[in-house]
Length: 226
Image (cartoon, rainbow, N blue to C red; front, top):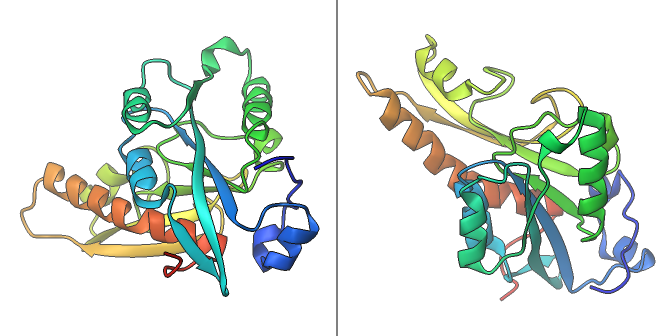
């Protein structure tokens, strides 16, 4: 991709290819960095769904690239997934840092080295501070219909609630936990007598369907570039 272009913070609020060209960023390729902490199933789904594929922005054909995946967990199973998929994976353990801000500063520097136009959180179990979020355009997936059931136990909380539905949300990341503007959101009906394991699996299947679509939405891309 050559020289790393500086993409402004509000870039995706009014994305155009002319703006990309003005910033020196190649029109033919858009790069993503994916952050994860554990199993990496959402990460793998993103790679298999989007990597090296062509899409349209207006009439311009562009190729999406997963430039790298980064984990804060040296024992994450997702590292093996990256190896099998041929995607570079970096490990930056948060335990090597004395505070969140120091880790986020190091993470930001690592991400900047890849020049992504978007950072995708896929099961990244860290609350990012403004040290990171004010420098990078990031999106996250959450297994509930936000603003309902924020936090790490969202699926369990949704399952045990009196609501007759669950869901998945994809949102922009800011300094508020699960508080950024929504990109896409979709619900699933609860089934009477359904086990938690079955409900959880249906939520994950919806995640796999929704996240690639939300990434394209965030980038202003659509199918038809092949």
